[in-house]
Length: 261
Ligand code: NAD
Image 1 (cartoon, rainbow, N blue to C red):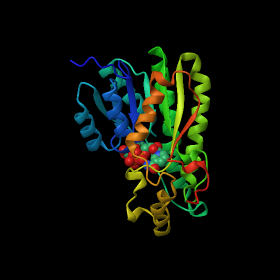
Image 2: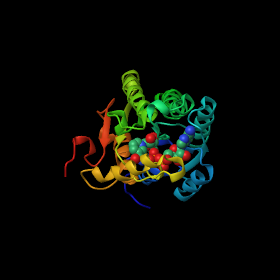
Image 3: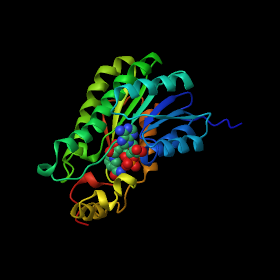
Image 4: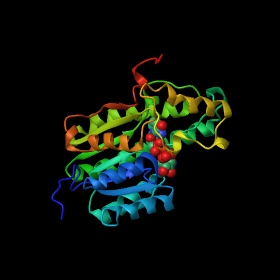
């Protein structure tokens, strides 16, 4: 038996959007660091396959549409039944929608808001009391560089991610007394299915622009989901014990300024 100490030994962390992309890598890394992980998503086959690959002893997959209140109640109950408690949450699930602001139907705007904002709000509301009951822990919300700056053609998304940062700050203030730290991750361009959308769902001009976007990154590459997972690990573990209420940019230098190189 290995005597190695994991950074999340003894922890139970629920991760939304864990069937693929960043959420999948967070689930794999957290489990490797000793946590029990609850993977939540709407992609049931993919999510269950990732959980099975991590191993039944450490991972449980639950179906959860983060925008549905009742779904959270069921997911929390399933997590507690399996692992006894929850002391960590990573609100990672999110969707992206491209369109010019003045051409965006209200229904599309609200669809993004329902998942990206309501999902984070409902997650904090459902899980924070569980973390408090467990004696404290962590919440990590996945925002975006689009929470700190605008980007053309993603108005609904940028608005939703600014809101995630607002929720992060308020939750950090309100939950500090219960030993719950709340921080946000702000990725730039990360190589996941979201950053590589299918041509049929993306207006051609936008597809061309986004395909070029990562080339303006000073480090000259997209981020990898595994790299974002390491930041989520830092914010979920003891190494960040005096940090709460903060956004953490992970973007290969994109936000540093205009890159003429
Ligand atoms: P992804 O599309 O690969 O993964 C997102 C996951 O969330 C998918 O498994 C999807 O099924 C799940 N999901 C979507 N709607 C859901 C819902 N209603 N309920 C539960 N699960 C749902 O994308 P990703 O890049 O891994 O994105 C992860 C997070 O990072 C998102 O919040 C995204 O906005 C954010 N982000 C991504 C990038 C990027 O460049 N990829 C940049 C900044 C921020």
